[in-house]
Image 1: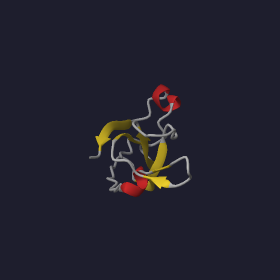
Image 2: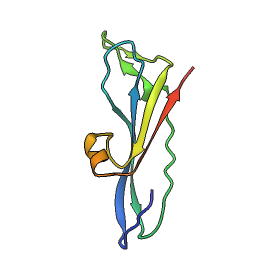
Image 3: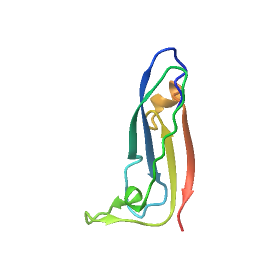
Length: 100
């Protein structure tokens, strides 16, 4: 993350995951990790965040955690993956991940 301003700033780096092949209905996006960071003016910081199976599970219709190795869409940015983020051009990275 980079602070392009001339003052110290704070940001929340967020990771959302979308299960694109779930065997049941799941939320469109799931917030799986976030970090609050302070960034000095004109500086950059790197956030290291690990995701495991726990972050990629969903709750099935029986109310139990379920993990299915499959395809996921991952969104990394300073907001949720919403239409507002697209309209306001909030910087983000989106990629697909397939677990086998």
